[in-house]
Structures are given as C-alpha cells and as structure tokens.
Image 1 (cartoon, rainbow, N blue to C red):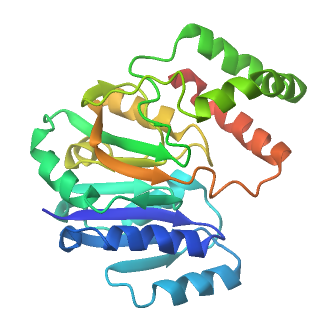
Image 2 (image 1 turned 90 degrees about the vertical axis):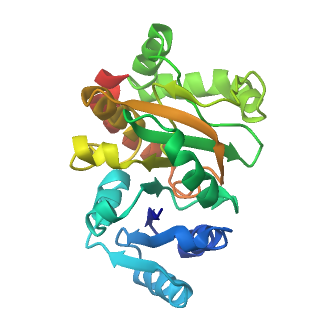
Length: 272
C-alpha cells in the first residue's frame, strides 16, 4: 500500500519542513510514495528557504504557485500533480502538523476496515493543550449553533462582543473540558479541515475538492461533496496527529481574519 501527502506552505518554511520531516520519520515511511508541498506564492526568501530545507529530503516535491490561491485550491494543485490511481490513500493537510511515528503504518493497517462507501477519514487531531478537534459534529450542526454563526458573521462589532463573552468558555474548551471524545471509529457529519484522508472512492465520485472559499469553512464544503456522492466520512482515533493550531494564520490581524471568515461563511453556510 502506498500513501501520498499534500500540504500547503505560505511564508512558514520552517514549520512546513518540520511537518514533512515528521512524515518521513514514520516507522513505515517506505509506504510513503510522495509528499507534495504547494508553495502559495510565499515571499521569495521563504520560498528559497523551503527549497533549501527540503532539498535533501527524499520523496518531497515542491510546487511554486504564482499567487496565493488559498487552502483547498492549493491542495487541488498538489492533488493534480499526483497520479491518484497509484495510492491507497492521500492525506491532505495543514503545514502546522506533527504526525505520530505510527501514523502511516496505522493508516495502512486500517484501510481494509473502511467500508466501500467511506470517502473521507478524519484522524484524531490533538492540539498543544491536549484537546481533540475531531469530530466537529457527529450529526448535522444544531439549529442553535447555526443561528449563532449567523449572528456572529452579521456584524463585526457584534462578533467582537460575542468573542468577549465567549472568551472564558473557549479557554475552558481549549483545555479539553466539556469535550466529548470517542475512542471508537464512527461515521461523522463534519470533520476538522486541518487533516483529512481521501480514499480512492472519493475520486471515483469527485474530480477534486470544492475550493469555493479561500480559507475557512472547507470542512462544510467537503461534507457536502461526500453527502452529494452518497458516501460517508468516518472518524478514526487510531490515526493520531498533533496540531499547532493557527500556525498558518496566527500572524493575520484580527480584522483581516474576521473578514476572511465572513466571506467564506456566506458561501458554506448553506451546507451546515
């Protein structure tokens, strides 16, 4: 069995390289066919640093984008560079991840456990505070939460007030409190977009990822693609990866971050 990885870099060569190195340090690294890094038009200095840092890493291919095309569009660029039929699974992911050393081996062992209608597998994504980001939602997003999103993205000042009120709640959740974590594989509705495993069945139904948004909300678009194809997403806690969380967007000003999220929300809200 062969597994490929696709990730996106934007002005963060050192973190991207650490993530790639964690894949190559896997016990079953021989099962890794190729790691494609799509550079989303980073500053020349960062792009050159990325080339230098990955130059001696086997199986790594860097593709330079002419513009910063966003997360899923960048991933589609990387997916387009692969011969998908050669792989039993393709991992698409952020660049701010650290893969546990048995990730590839566990994935290869688990592939036969997935039913034929499983298109996407969501791994156990663990933050620096040891909270688990998957699954986001086992069933469809509750109406109360959808109303909350609508209010949040209706007005920036209202969003700031909600952020202020929710600050202690989010701090509590960040510590893993109040979270319901399942140690069993199960079908889910919505995963966290930091890391997803696309199975061959996905590409039998879909040509590529829905890249309608620049960044944020990709999980909802992917969930819609899976439902439209009559397939399933499953959460598999046997696959473990660590997330530095906002390692790729942490430098953005809050206003710019909110505006980006709001633009994306207008597109993906219909799929929540």
